[in-house]
Image 1 (cartoon, rainbow, N blue to C red):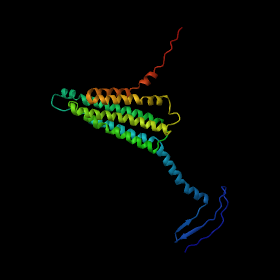
Image 2 (cartoon, rainbow, N blue to C red):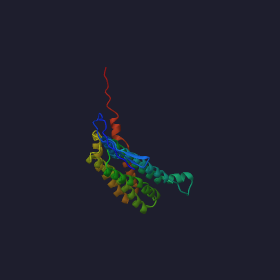
Image 3 (cartoon, rainbow, N blue to C red):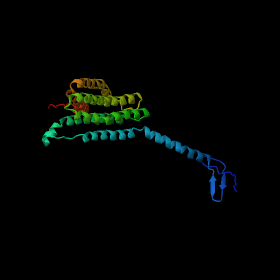
Image 4 (tube, rainbow, N blue to C red):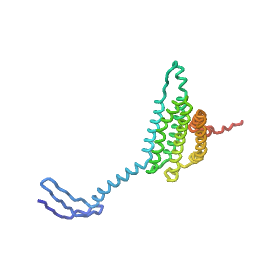
Length: 261
């Protein structure tokens, strides 16, 4: 049978004073009521834990780790498409595969440039919201798609008709990667997702590069319709330009003041 009793508890230093009630259910199970302050604390800690989990999700660390893995996977897929084909001797086969090497270099450098820009963006981020995570997925979609047109361009180097289509596909993919990266940056600035010290001169100079780079890719894509080989060369030049730290080299050599005695 269940018995309930009530009594007064000693006043604690926190000023908590409640009745202590226990209900026995069967011979071995007993449910005890606790002090109101303890009940409030027991109820509030799961909510605090949930807030901490949400705060961890908004941190850019997960976005950066997942994106680095996708960038690395896409770059690795490019190597898997390198191959030589008969007929001919070994050296002849290796030399005849030069379109594959060129397409590999262009795509790898483009992925590398995208990864460098993405790493610079995540270094400046203070938090990441849901929209930024979805925009980042779009960037990763176009990055991991790049090995497909790269393989098509390498395989159709000696077929003029199909080469034009495949080079145009490659150019559009390269342009999409760069545009998606700039979209991430633009949304991060509008959403105030950057840390206070993250918006400096480097970020503003990168923003000013958007229009010239997009225009250069657009011109190269149009040229590729008539001259595919020239377009691939332009893609390669743009990839080198995006990867090579021209501004960093310029800043790394401060003027040397000669001391006159």
